[in-house]
Image (cartoon, rainbow, N blue to C red; front, side, top):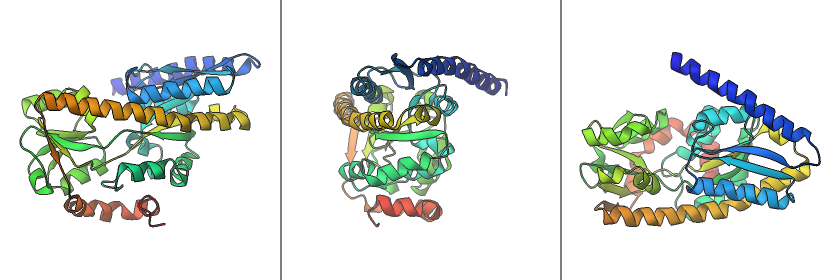
Length: 331
């Protein structure tokens, strides 16, 4: 309880300090305005590279009237705290995964549904098109403005026990998941035992046998060193929830319509650089884990996996029906 209270206090202290900086910058008309972007990944991570490209494009397109300082490595708090600071207007922009955002915008949770997209090309055609814009518009009323989606790859399962090529092979495995009802339901629909756990505890839990496996994208599997223990990685890409670049509504409202258009354009243009960085890191990750002895199991027929998770669609289908239809091309 004390820890939670301290966290809240720190958030509001940071909000007061950063809000003062931001408001001061906006008040100096004719001078360069410096804005703040919160990023919890390291400086060389693809999402940070995307954020820096967004900042570069904004400065270029506004002829230096605006600069964006990217605070990477979680300097402004973990994702949830950074989003809250952005809602308060203390932080101007934030990059976060779409899955934790369901607490602020329940409709965005549709992107975490299993096997939602047929392939990555289809996914990005949708997310950078009108459907993606419509999804970003669902942030209206949350004190946040959706600017663009960034690549986060596909999440797959990995474990210490055996190769997994079908849902049948998942049975009995203890799999770490994020603390969300949807994540738990997906894993349990596949016959495994879902174990919610903080990400920082996964390595030691794999090592000590508390869990048999986890799930994540390839770069995370590599950079976390989980591949040193969990040697079996299944390439089934069961989930493809993207990252989201967001603006504070307070900051957005202080921009002219012309500048809003410039910032939006810069955000969309930064996607290409971010996705290129993601693709490069994914290839490096695959090469390195393969060299280290990890066994990569390809899944050519995804139909039995889709069938296994049908109970998840039965449970959440009504909640997300409009978006499931749009994202599957039924509308």
